[in-house]
Length: 455
Image (tube, rainbow, N blue to C red; front, side):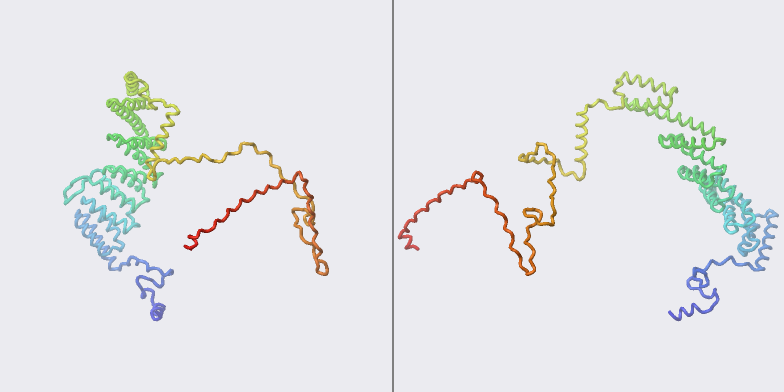
């Protein structure tokens, strides 16, 4: 390790020591920075300038093919010369005039990538936008030189490139909006909604934001017009149009949004009436009455409402008003409802995975002790002891009767004898139990002679 470290620390030029891309002269010891664009020589500059003049002369003669060829040679020999940005721009223009829109767009894209500070940047973005709009308008893509169909996918990619390389350009919001348009034409409504939402999020103050907001409602509105019975799409379309009218009251599309709201309301009534007629046809009169009443509620005064009201009266005459009620078919008393809840609870418990069987009832003991029924009187605390507990008082239960301390000679005085209690009167004496006579012992019989012999 010592020779290697000594080699690293020797005074050598900064560009002479490179260990796996590590730059020892970097202020933080990091990787070596990427090399800058090489500075072209004077010979390369002169060659690029001469080639640019020859290409412009060919372009002036109307020979766009020859001009495009010379522009490519200039870029190949001097991509970093002063004439390179103009040559790249001229090449894209020549391809566009020849009708090669895809090649022209890619040439413009190379300009925005390699020469973002060029003088023709704004013109390049405008040209890219026009080409992408041409594909969005129905320009057919070519397969082996034969047009086969509109290339909405290519238009989407072109608009995405414009937003990517020029996000703050004045055409960027409209390019983002056109991404949503291209997705709509590809039958991708959810992706189109995301593109329109991106317009509102990134460019809320741009005039195209109100168009994006309206278009979000229109995407859902088209789903309802195409025969979809999904109530969610209808509700979302109505909410989007109402929000649009409230946010942008000065927009020219407000009147159209209100017309769409009226159509959505009529679509709701028509769809609900069709559902009611379906249940009516299948003789599910209760469900039919529910949807007939819904038509009456959401569209009062309309022909559909009058038709629904008339049919409800007819159904009442056929099956009765009670059969059309949506509540319980028969009122249940408290005991019946309680029994029903208990039965449902038993079913729920039995269906649990940890159910271990019905409840086992064990007999309760019958010889339990009886509880006290007499009321408990007031609790009286005992009297506190009086006197000094440090003094030995004969008969005091709190102080033990200790022997007196020894005198100077070490002898203890005789302990005081406890006084004998007085004799009880004879009346209080208990009669002694009479002694029972002991049973007489049985006389021992003389042992038999035969038993003695056996012993």
